[in-house]
Length: 65
Image 1 (cartoon, helix red, strand yellow):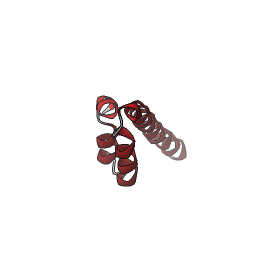
Image 2 (cartoon, rainbow, N blue to C red):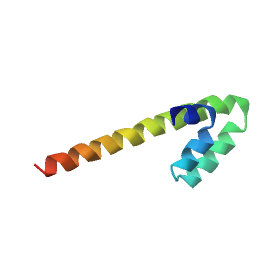
Image 3 (cartoon, rainbow, N blue to C red):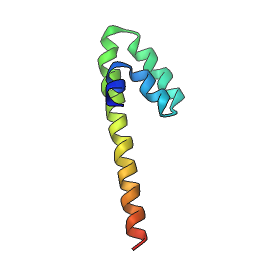
Image 4 (cartoon, rainbow, N blue to C red):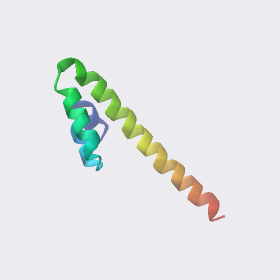
C-alpha cells in the first residue's frame, strides 16, 4: 500500500474511502511539482491511519483487562 501511496497518491486515498481527499490530491498531482507533496501527503496519511488502528487495538485490549 505504501508503494501505491508513492506512485499513485490519488488511488491511495480512493482505496481507503476518502473520495473528497482523493479529488484534492488529484488536483495537486496534475502538476509535476505537486506530485511530490501529494505523494508525501499520501504516505503520511497512510502512516497516521495505521497508527490510529494500532492505538484503538491497544485501548480495546486495555479495557478488556
